[in-house]
Length: 119
Image (cartoon, rainbow, N blue to C red; front, side):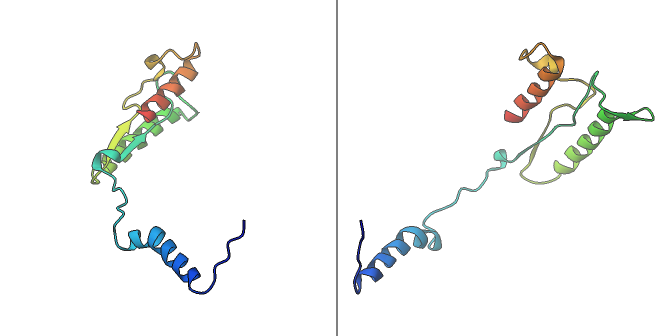
């Protein structure tokens, strides 16, 4: 189907398109939603924990470094406005006890982290 616009009709269509798509935004007739304070949530997941130490070097375990950095990051972010900070763990524990998705401890731990993030 071919629509032929002649003379002033093209200008009318351009004005209609402008009024429909761009004018409401320019005139602030359409408001974009502003995030509420309760909507700004940051989840920090300091990986490993409990019996899962991650890698190590000279008796320094990855799980301990992850937790220490995660706690410092949480403390820093809590000083900012409009942020809620959630940690998947705040001590040296695994999360596999939080669900029964699998017989594998590792899979249960990972799924628990996903559940926390999704909440």
